[in-house]
Image (spheres, helix red, strand yellow):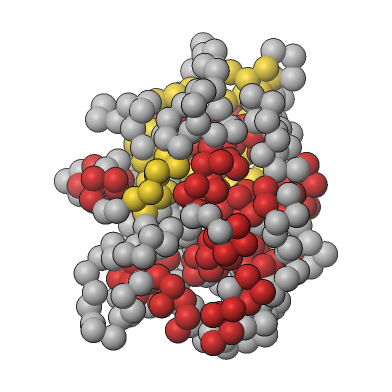
Length: 406
């Protein structure tokens, strides 16, 4: 659902007191909710397969006192950053070229365990992007094909004329407002259509797809990047139409059962069974790290299974001919100068090989290919977006990556 995306395109200014919001934490309900989505709303199971992946060895590594340069220019320790950014669980893996992968850190709040699924918010989009890559690698999805080739019903919507590539890179010309704090914004109306919050008007569509069909075009397809959670939901629709399978089954067969996951994941579904590909997936901390390890290894999991072809990962890291220009031309304030968005991932700086999957309220997948480090942080920020918390977390993971792989 759009309200569970991550849109750094509208990040607030950095506060003078960067962690002021940490003193405004609620009563824990948000933290509990993010760990119990399957108890609250309908979900579909994303199975991890019949054989669990191998356990990874733990390394005695303690980065708590490692200093982090904050966005303000000041410093804090890794422990302080994690404590003051409402962390529910975080982990760091290092895939040493000589000895293989190991777990450097894996920590949880007391009420969360290694088997607890946690809402990933818009990191779900990155999983959907990998499902698309797997299908493209099999010749079942054509990236330059119009979306209407797969879903003819979209001819009546603003997506008429858009391609699969436009969805993957969020470059359609469809009008969609991603303002989480405005109840009337599209990102909040799509929540109502999906059924995750009460409908505030009888005019609100009753299903996700009905909502998507009502969207209209306001600019040319293939123009500047603009973060639109609806693109991921249309992508999910296309993936299902291209295969005749439900998204949860595609994610299980093509991704989750191949990465060495040790637990099932799940994804929210609406009244028609349509998956919330923009932010409805829940998974365990360590399984998301194994997903990141597959990305680090160029699309091949720790079990040796190819999830996506190497060319897909190269395309994601390098972007298209005008990805950086489209990102720079975005009307949003993306706070990542020199970066771009490709295949449902953020690349914060074209000069260094780092991939990010981001979700509001502090969900993060960090993959540093040069340092061979994967990090995951699952959180419950009291506000959807916080520029300082986001980039402080990236800085903390950067510091760890530099420390273990100088």
